Picture 1 (cartoon, rainbow, N blue to C red):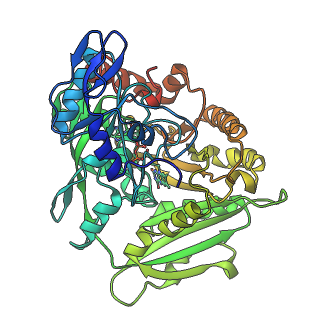
Picture 2 (cartoon, rainbow, N blue to C red):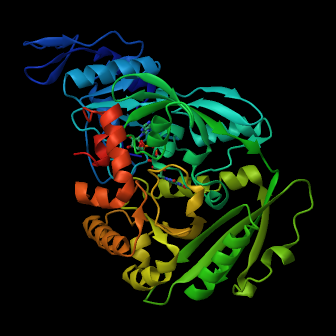
Picture 3 (tube, rainbow, N blue to C red):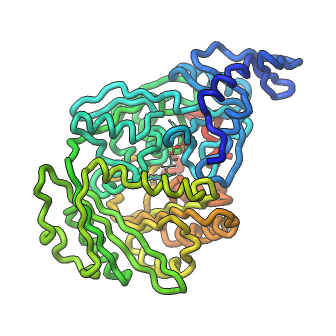
Length: 493
Ligand SMILES: Cc1cc2nc3c(=O)[nH]c(=O)nc-3n(C[C@H](O)[C@H](O)[C@H](O)COP(=O)(O)OP(=O)(O)OC[C@H]3O[C@@H](n4cnc5c(N)ncnc54)[C@H](O)[C@@H]3O)c2cc1C
């Protein structure tokens, strides 16, 4: 990858650029090497570091989407929640913005996995989540972890105890704090809701610089406002997450469909009876204007050496039967299934190219109409090496008010995870995303607050949140009245 990484060397070099104060006259930082003239507000003592090192700032300027550049003035590598509180208080006094940056990934490929600058904080202070990466406790029913721990780290540690998080994102190398702040959707959403719905408690630093604990019964407005709350009221520093017994093995059923109606009918059948613990699906956009095909991936779990009988699991479904495949794998390998794909597209240069993703929740009753209208607008080149996920879930499983869904009992995830060919101009795709989003909203859809939808206005966000707009603004005014936190979501510009 070509992007600068926050390597050990950069951190050490960064230490030489440690900030000593903020010049309120020139609105710039003073470091030990370049003490500025003018009125200097000293940075309060920190256990961690605050640096203006250019390589470090550059590593926080872009995200996975490669569509925006928002370079922070400085990067905080916190030693703990108190450092974040200190910096938030400092930022409030000096009219600066602060945002947590997931800095997750594999090896030295650490970055925010946002698509459109959601963790960006141009001219403000980025907080390096990777510095908070300890697993504090694992019990038979839950785990307490720092916000910068990845789902891969947690899964590995939980499996060693015969346990697993009930909800996993398809790609595990994402930060716990980042995904529970946006929601965190995966193949078990129909059973457990979002990852945010599996959180039992959080430690959070509010936009007023207080370190608080929040649970469904203690600081409940903070708890529900932070989970799936897009980082608007606090920075989550620690979370206690539900764990469940892990199965040993996974039997993966892959079913193909030639027509949309049969596909949607079978998805709904599976959703109704919940016969599979894991249920996803995909639209397979075809070349030369041919009609799309569809794919269900449903997974049954089992222990020992005898896999479940396919007959009852496939009863009542009508895929193109000759194309059905059944494969057995370990549960662990299934959870890491995206890693090989990620490695290959990194090698092919797709990871570093712009990726204008579009993630929507469609009302089930309008999904057929939406897909019929939208799919002819997409070509295989729009998807590139990526994929288009499309599968249903019960909206009632999403318990946090800011995880807004269509006002129907069932919604479909429409997740255009495009990896366009390197060199492709992303502007037409961004324009398309906006057009598709506007049409989806007309049909009652909601966006998932990741992805790249240009020109989101405050009015768009108000429409998005609907009745929950009042909840969001009330908690924002209470916990981040100076609008210090997470400007990259562009909800409160
Ligand atoms: C290859 C790949 C696969 C993916 N698969 C899935 C998937 O299966 N399901 C899914 O739901 N998503 C998926 N995503 C999207 C992912 O959920 C988002 O990228 C999300 O933003 C998490 O990434 P992150 O941990 O890097 O956090 P960031 O992108 O850095 O942060 C997300 C937002 O939350 C804020 N934030 C981050 N940490 C905190 C915190 N501790 N407290 C408060 N606010 C915080 C940030 O400022 C930002 O606004 C995938 C992304 C990629 C690149």
